[in-house]
Image (cartoon, rainbow, N blue to C red):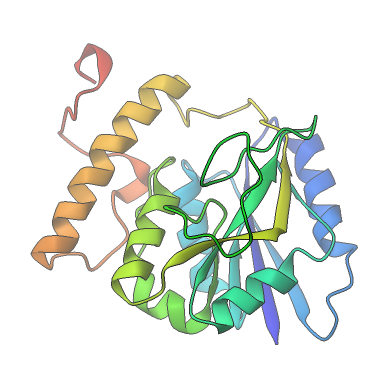
Length: 223
């Protein structure tokens, strides 16, 4: 079985990207093969994930981040969750070991606890078929995937062994805006995407290039 690991990255994050890439490639995957696809220079994480998922060959698709270092054996609980009909959400830690995962920030939850979002998505090929196309924002991309999966019958749960260390690389965090502006922008875009899904008009990745044309959506300064 093939696991496709998709890693978006941009200029200025070379050091942390190399460390994360090497951590994926150096592990033993006990019967699973791994292909790692680098998606370089996309305007948003959502655009990179969509592009990578379209060209990957995996039975499983892992939508990673270039500043999230995988723990040894990260794939085993993720595969188990998917095969049991769930979406796994990881236990994420700061470099100092502080827990940053769901359901409660600062607390290591119990394995298999239901959670509201798959923070670093891992899905099967069948799940991808039902979830895609993606919301192509920079933030809320994981929320969109979680909601699409839940609607198709795959709820999200915490898998404590599906674990990562998050280094919070700063280059490009706001994808062309300040981080705060981008969060506001993407929250409003995400709400509009949800309306499109509800109306039955969700048939292609949106918004094109990660930005909305001709709309304000509550941006500071009217942008």
